[in-house]
Image 1 (spheres, rainbow, N blue to C red):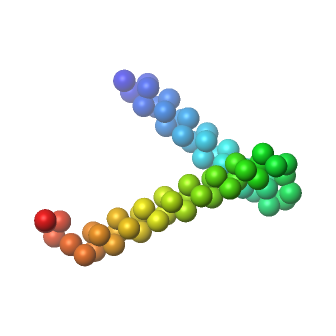
Image 2: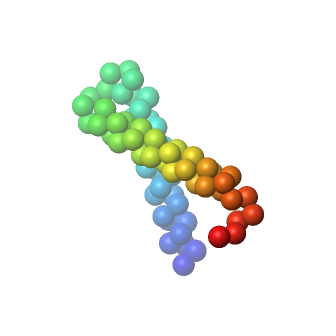
Length: 67
């Protein structure tokens, strides 16, 4: 079970690093597929950031953690 979790984490790490590489490459004028991967990477990052902000706002409204 631990090996499966480690394999999934390594896979996610490879996707994240690959996405970051595509973002940098696209700013330097990479091919069309690199720009597409970079756009997806940036969109997922924005969604993740937005979800974190929303979660923090809801926690700040109710600091006791009740109801």
